Image (tube, rainbow, N blue to C red; front, side, top):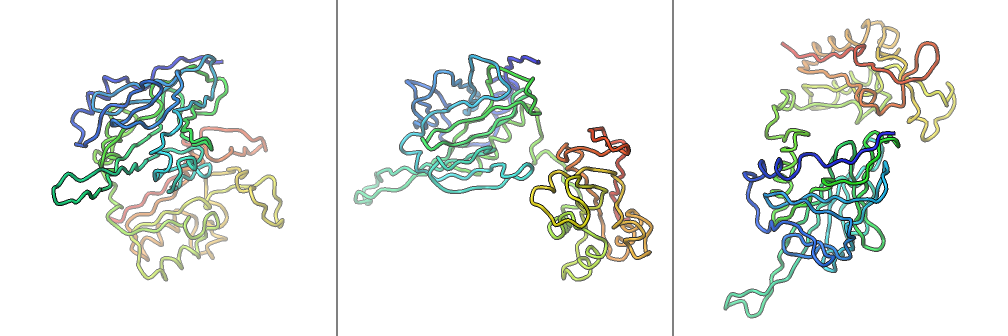
Length: 368
């Protein structure tokens, strides 16, 4: 068993040094805890804050939320507090993991509807304020204020948010590989908390602050791949795993808007479902038990599946590139390479994980 008492991903100095020159926003008073209340931008966000919640300020205005536990574990659920009255009914938008590999948005209110495994949470707080103009005749205007919660990696642990029926906002900390032997008793930088009056600038600048911790590169500092200049098509959106050569050809011919790049997604490689025999009707859930037999093309993309017109997948790709004037063709196998496939079936019938990267054949063609 690995016992870890981790201390975050860089401390206030690293993030603060990079955050000082990041954009401009108003209402960026540093979050703090006082008298059992969490205050952000001068506003109370939550009350009944537990004593084990920790706020680590960044010099540029935001802060990291963390917490401590009396006992080490591979999974902790910590409470940020009960959302204050003006936050309970505020609107929110969040991104949450709806399936093992898919993240989708949710909008609405109240905040108690925030789902498990939320990866980003943006609260919109509306406040009425009296107009001081002499011609306002006592009218009021509605100010909008935004509070952003961004769960992040903290050492070997990853974080997500969730709401409860009691209007509590919580964050869950789990060992990144789901390993019960990787345990810890505290996190100091599990959730980035930031605020401002412009949601777009708030999101952009918060991501730039996190970039200073060297876990990723902001899009402004990345070199865009050349295929982004062209219209393209991914076979997953049409065929899922039932992709086949004839369907690809028909899509390229009849689409009405000729693509210049093509992504052949999962469905071309050799897999099997050990819990379902040939000829049996499909059962929901069995697709998640498929095993990777070979990273080479399956029979659909061999000569028998190509009406004898092509030898293999590589030959097929070269043919459609020339016939339909494609500039780029990508063949993906990312679910398996990222560990999202259950395992690989060996020739001797034994199921075990292995490093399949050296055996991967990738065709990334570019028209000269």
